[in-house]
Length: 339
Image (cartoon, rainbow, N blue to C red; front, side, top):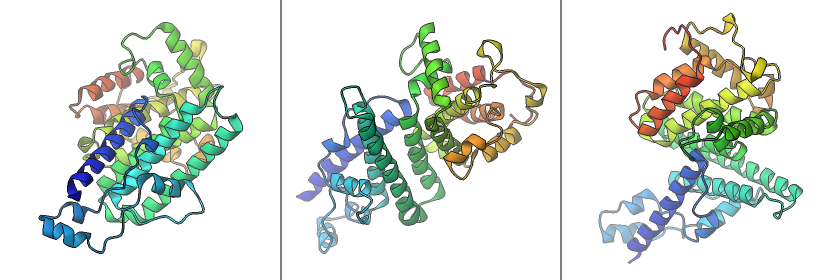
């Protein structure tokens, strides 16, 4: 009987899916890689949901053999190969497979690993595969999904760019949030994280990560029910907000005053947090990440911090409630209208 086998395949793929999500949103190591999955992609939903064995066999007759997960992944990594027809669920498995390849590439980037030139070429190939997936998804998958479901999927896509171009550990350390990795960060951890992020803030990787962080916030803050349905969305909002905050504080050499503490002028006082946030997102949501370096208002994150904090206060997940407290500490005291 094939159905138990299909069940095992789907469970294996879902375990891999959740493993990638955990690694992406929390910056942790994966338990496995895409190359461990030598299984087919899942069958279509109408075949999975057949009410009887007779109906199932009837659906099965005439169906093409399902593609192997690894082979489909290689097709996306090869710019010359024609893309297959995928179901929405299969397309998301492929995205998570590409994210896994990125983690594996980062893990192999060491003094005893491939040369910098070889690593750079592989990274460029992976980014092209991401773009290829996004184009395929936008044309063939997105039109058949609800806006909420589509936004949830794209939050994961944008989160992948952040994770692959930002040290999440450094990010939450400099924000004063040490819950995820260890309870008591040493002062030296903070200064090391700040030094590395200062170098990061002036790099193309920071522009790329910040641009995708802005895309997450634009999608997440537009629909209230979006962040209430899937746990990865509110946490991704939190990380995206920290990315924007760090980039705003550290990307400009004139952004900080004595001792590295940002100087606040009276012009930066927030009178309407939502309007301030909208102006910031509008200015930072450029046509491409390369244009972000010319965007205005890079430091204008107080309204964003206030609105995201207010939005997340209604979420009952304990991890998010503690994140709300972190955002409160980051946001200077202001007279806020509409917070």
